[in-house]
Structures are given as C-alpha cells and as structure tokens.
Length: 158
Image 1 (tube, rainbow, N blue to C red):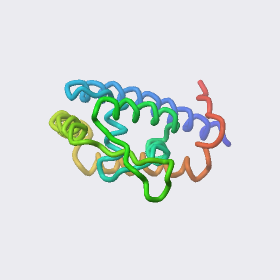
Image 2 (cartoon, rainbow, N blue to C red):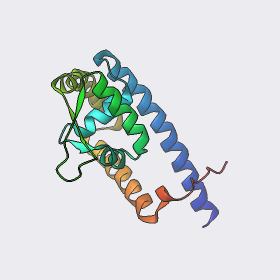
Image 3 (cartoon, one colour):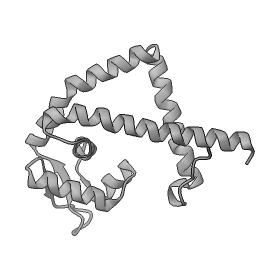
Image 4 (cartoon, rainbow, N blue to C red):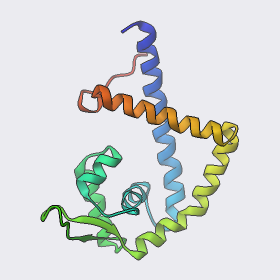
C-alpha cells in the first residue's frame, strides 16, 4: 500500500467516524419528540418493512446481536414492538413493530423530510445527493468484499 493510499484510507475512516457522530446527533434530535432514541428508531426502522430476527437486524445495521437484543427487549417492554413466532426458526423469534411503534416512527417523518430537503439543497441537488449515496454504498460493499468487517479495525494514520 502506498503512502497516498494509506492517507486516503485514513481520511476516509476519519470522515466516516465524524459522519457517524453527526448522524447520531441529528438522529437523536429527530427521534426525541417521538419518544425514541436514535438506536430505538434504527431498530424499529429495520423491521418496518417486515419482521426480522434480532440477528438479521444486527446484520442489516452492522452492529452486534447483543446490542440489538437489548434495544429490542426495551422496545417490547415499552409496547413499541413485539416478538412473534418465527416459522423458520423456533427459538429466534421475529421482532415486529406494534401500531404504537409505527406511530412513533411516523412522528419523525416531518423532521426527517425537512433534513433530507436541507441536505439536497446543501449538496447542490438531488443528483448530487444520489451520487453521495452511491459512493457510500460502494465504499461499504468494498469493505465487505475485502473482509474489513471481520478483521481488526484499521487505525487512522495521522
């Protein structure tokens, strides 16, 4: 790996770490009026299209199964989600949002829509936003392809 490649990797990692922090902060602000945290919103959002087992949610989110299990149990405790039988696996129940959970996520929609519109303006239009999404998806796919998710983290070079 050349020094130029190492520098690009380090800048990318630091940029993504910063972006992650920014997304978490804005997500907390958006989720708070709905009575959710960013993590609760993320887990509920993962199961809005269809119920999933905790391990499936963890794979989609790229976090540990234990973290998702903890959040899922809290969502169930608070009536925002429920466990239902999984026909494919007797022990791995499916998490599904309740009507209260769906309503909470829908309360976030106006703020979410406004943030999306602001980002479109800031990035210079929908095409630029779409390109940003494609680049991030390519980066994620490339990291998955080289197995970085299974190896020790790459320490940013200063």
